[in-house]
Image (cartoon, rainbow, N blue to C red; front, side, top):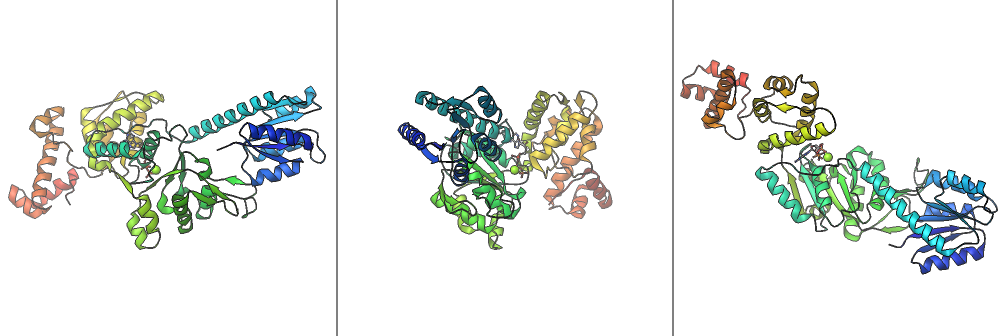
Amino acid sequence: MPNTILIIDDEAAIREALSGILADEGFTPLVAASAEEGLQLLDEKDVNLILLDIWMPGMDGLEALKLIKQRFDLPVIVISGHGTIETAVQATRSGAYDFIEKPLSYDKIILSINKGIQLSRLERENRLLRESGPTKIYITGNSPPITRLREQIERVAPTDAWVLIRGGHGTGKELVAQTIHRHSLRSKHPMIAVNCAAIPEELIESELFGHVKGSFTGATENKKGKFDQANGSTLFLDEIGDMSLKSQAKVLRILQEQKFERVGGVRTIEVDVRVLAATNKNIEEEIDRGNFRADLFYRLNVVPIMVPDLVDRREDIPPLIEDFLNQFGKKGIGRKQFADEALQLLQRHSWPGNVRELRNLIERLVIMSPGDRIGVNDVALFLGNAPLLPLPVHPGAGGYHLLSSFKAARRQFEMDYLTAKLLENDGNVTKTAELIGMERSHLHKKVKALGITVK
Ligand SMILES: Nc1ncnc2c1ncn2[C@@H]1O[C@H](COP(=O)(O)OP(=O)(O)OP(=O)(O)O)[C@@H](O)[C@H]1O
Ligand SMILES: [Mg+2]
C-alpha cells in the first residue's frame, strides 16, 4: 500500500512542487494550506508522515506540531525558510523527526521521508511485539493429543485460513494462536490480540474497527481499530463467544469482503487480515440460545482446532514442569528440582485450570518450598484435599521401587488396586467390597482417604 504524506504549507508553489515529486516517488501526497486544515485532514485520512512548514498565518507550525504529537503517533519533518538554530531545536524538542531548510533539496526530503517511515514502522512493530506477551512460543509435550495438535498447527499455519481454537481455561489456546502466526506467511509482522471478554460490550466495536472523533461520548479523537493495526498480519480474537451479535455481523462481513467502517465513520476501509479466534464456550449451545451467529461459526470453524485438557495428557506434566523450571530459572526465581514422587503426585491431580494452573503451582512451589529439592510433602501441602487420579502411565509392580518409603508404595498400590476394582464394578462400593473381601465401611473410608473418584 503506498504511504500517504501530508504536506502542510501555506505556499501553493511549494505544495504543488512537493506533491509532484512525492507522487513520482510512489507516495500518495495530501495537501493542506494551513495548520488548521492539516489537523482536520489528519482526523479524516490515514497519513503515514507529515511535512510541516513553520511560518504560516493562523496557527504556526510549532503549535501544530505539539497538537499533532499529542494526538497522533506520526513522524513529522519540519521544513522552514526562516530556519534558525532555535526553531530547529524547538521543533526537535517538540518531537519533529527531522528539520529541513528551504530552499528544499528534494533528494534530502525523499531520503528523510524514507527514513522516517521506516523508523516509525520499526517503532510500531517493536511496541506491538513488546505488548504481544510471551516470547516463548513452543508447545511442550509428547502425548498423542499434543502430537496431533502440533500436526494440525503445521498444516493450517501456512494457509490463510481463519481458525477457531477451542479448549478449556488455560489449555494453551493463545499459545496455539501464537504458534500458528509464527509459522504463517504473515510472521514478520506481530500478531495483534484482542480479548473480547475484557472489553465492555459497547466498546468492542470501537476497539476492533476504530472510531471517528465525536461518534460517541468519550470519542474525543479519531482512533484506529485493531483490524487496521493487524493489516497484513494476523488478528487474534480471544474469547470470541463474548462478542455482541452486532460485532459478530461486522466480523462476518470482513471475513466475506475484507471491508469495514469505523464507528461513526462513512469511509469504507479495506484490509487484509487473517483472523484466529478462540473460545472456551460451548458455541453450539450459544448458537441455540441465539447468542452466536451460526453463519460466523461455520465460516470460522472450517479448520477447528481443539486444545486438549491437561487431564487427558497427564504424561506431558513432567516435560511441562521442566520447561517451567527453566523459564523461572532464567527469570531468576531460582532453580529447583522435583523428587520423583512429587512429580508422580502432580500427575495424579485433575488440573481443572489446565496448564495455567500447573504453571502457577510450580511457580509457587519454587518460591515457597525451602531447599533445592521439592518433595512429595511440599506438593501434597499445595494440592490439599483435591481427589487424586490413578497415575497416567501405570507404574506396574516394577514402578514401586521409584517410591522411597514403604508407606508411599503401599498408598500407591492401594490407589491402583482399588481404582481398578471399583472401575470393574462401575464404582459400586458395596459390590466391590464384597468381591475383594473387605468391610464396606472400611472400603468407603479408604476411598475417601485416598481421594479416589470413579465415575
Ligand atoms: N503446551 C504448552 N507448552 C508450554 N507452555 C504452555 C503450553 N500450554 C500452555 N502453556 C502455558 O500456559 C499458560 C496458559 O496458556 P494460554 O494463555 O495460551 O491459555 P488459554 O487457553 O489462552 O487460557 P485462558 O482460557 O485462560 O485464556 C501460558 O503461560 C502458556 O505459555
Ligand atoms: Mg487465553
